[in-house]
Image (cartoon, rainbow, N blue to C red; front, side, top):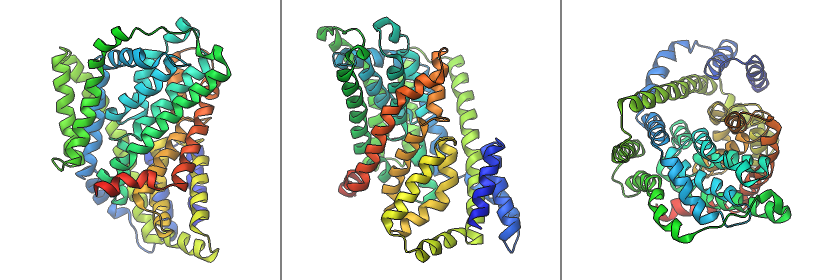
Length: 427
C-alpha cells in the first residue's frame, strides 16, 4: 500500500499534473484500491470545512498584508536604512540583503514575496559596487526563506491547521531559530568575503549621521510585526484576528504615506485572490487525501513497519529529514509540506517528538528545499528578477547557505530547547 502510494505520487509529479489535482487523484486511486467504502461523497464536506475554517482565514489576511506592504514603497526606504548600518562589514550590502529579508519577511509571511521585494531593490547594486554576483544573488535567495520561519508565517498557519497544533506556540518557537539563522547567513557572507576579499566589492563608507534620520523607515515593518505578534502574545486576538489587525495597520501606513489609491487596492486584491485560490485548492486536495489515508490505515501501516524494524526515534527523524531533502529537489515547498504532513507528523509524534518542534523542523527543511537545485523556487525567482545570465549562478551562490540551513537543522536536533524554550516560558 505504501509503495503504491509513493509510486502514484511520483507518477503524478513526473506528469506535471497541478498539485491540487494530483493530491486529489492520489486520494481517488488509493480509495478505489484499498478502501471498503467510497469516500468520494466526502469531497463536498471536505471542501466546505476547508474553505470555512476560521484558522485558515489567516492565510488570505497575511497574503493581503504582504501585498499592501509590497506596493507602498516601504521596501526601498527600509533597505536604504539597513544599508547605512550594516554595509560597513566585509561583504557590504550582502549583509543588508540578509537583514532586510529578515525584517521584511517577518510581517509579509511569504518567502517568495520577500525574495522578490528585496531582490528588486538590491540587484541593481551588484555592478555598481563590483560584488561577486553569484554570492550576492545567493544572499537574497537564502534570505528570502526567512519569511516563513520568522513569524507570522503562512506555512505555520497551514501546519497548525492540518495538525491541530497551537499557532501562537509555533510563532513563539520560530523566533529564536529565525534570529540564529539570520546570524548564520550573515556569518556565511563574512567568512566568504574574508576568504575572498574581492567578493565583497568596493568598500562602502558609512556616514552614521546620515543613517540616524533613516531609522524611522524601519518602523513600519517592525511595527506591523509587533502589532501582529503582540496581539497574540497578550491574548488580545487570535492568530486570524491579529492578521486582520495587521491589515488595518498596513492600510493606515499606506494612507499616511499617501499611497492608498483604488488602483493599488485593485492590484492588491487581485494578487491576494490568485495566491489564496492556489493555496486553498491545494489544501482541499490534501485534506481529502488525508481522510483517505486515515480510512485505509496507511499511517498505521507505516507505524507497524517502524515497530517491526525496531527503528529508534533518531532513525525515524533521520529518515524524515532525508525524505524532505530529497523531495525538496523537485517539489514546490507548500505542495511538499501539505502532501507529506498527514503521513510524517503522526510518525514523528508517535516517536516522541513534540508537534511544535516538528513544525519548526519542517519549516527549516522547506527553507532548504527552496534554495536547493534543480527546482528550488527562490532560485527561479531571483534568476527571473535578474533577467540575464544562467540559473547556475544563483545555484552556486545559494550553496553555502544550504550548508548554513543544514547546520541549523542539526543544531535544533541536538538542542531542541532552541525551539521549545520560548513557548515553554510563555506557556
